[in-house]
Image: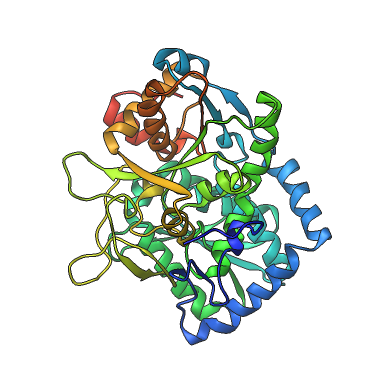
Length: 408
C-alpha cells in the first residue's frame, strides 16, 4: 500500500472513495445517496473557492483564535532527560479543543447550503460543545446526540451545550457512548436530510465527512509547520509527532502538512484499564476490517463479527473503530500506533499539569504518556511534539475521583 506523492491525505482514495483499496467508501442506504452526493459536490467546490477560503481563515483567526501556541515543555524535558519535548497547545483554541475547526467549517457549509438546522454527535462532549458554540454564532438551530454514559461523565460540556441553546439528546441504546451517539445521529439525518445539515465530529463515516473534518483540522499542522521552522530554522531531522487517536480527527490535522517530511507519526489509542480485557485500540490489538458508520475500517468485533464492547476512561477515545485515514496510514507504514492505559494517561496528566502551565484532557494525556515513555530513551538532539488537543476542564470530576485532586 503506497501513499501518492503530491496528493493531500484526504484525496488519497480511489474512484470508489476507498483508501488503499480497503478502507473508507460510502456504505450508505439509498436514501442518503443524493444528500451525500450533493454535499460532496458542494465541498469540492467550496474548498477551492477563494471567497470561502477567505471566510474560513477569517473565522479561524477572529473566532477560533489561530494560531494556537507552540511551546517547549522545559520542566518536563529536564525531568525526563533525553529528547526535547514540545507541545502544540490546541486547547487554547476557543472552547478548549480542536473540535472547533470542524464545527466552524460545517456551520459555514450549512449556511452556504441554505440549511437552518444542524445536528451532530459527541463523546467527550467537545464536538458537541463546539458545534453548539458555532451554531449559536452563525444563527443555526442545533441538536446534539450523546450517549447517556457520556452525559454523566462529561457534565461540564453538557452544561455548556445547553447554555448555548442546543438540544442534547441522550442515547440509551447499546453501550450508551460515542458509537451509539453517531448511529442515532445518522438515523436522524436519514429522516431529515432535506432540512438538516449533519456534522460528524471526527474523521469517520461516509467519505465526505472524513474529508471535511480532516480538511478543517489541517489548520493545526499549517500553523505548526511555520512554528517549527521559526523555532529550529528547519524541520528537525529526528522529529516525532505524537497524537492521541480515537476517531482520529486531531491526529489527521496534526500530521497533514508533514506528510512529505521525515517526521515520524505516532498515534496513541486508548488501552483501557490495566485490569480489563476491554479497550478502544483496534489498530494496536489486531482488529479485523469491518463496516461501521458507513465506512470500512479496522474495528473491534466479537466472535460473531458484531461490533464489540470498548472501555476507556477517556470518552473522546472510547470508540470501537478508527478513521479509514489511520487504517491507510498504518498499512502504508507512514504512521505507527500504540496504546496507553487509563492509569498511564492519569499519571501523564498529573505529571504534565504539575510541571507545566497546561492541563491536558484525558485524550491527549494518552499521547503525553507515550512521550513520557519515549523521551528518556532518545538523544537530546531529537524532538518530540505532542498535540495537546483538549483542555482538562471537562474531566475534572473523573480526575478528582481517581487522583483525589484536580490540577488546573
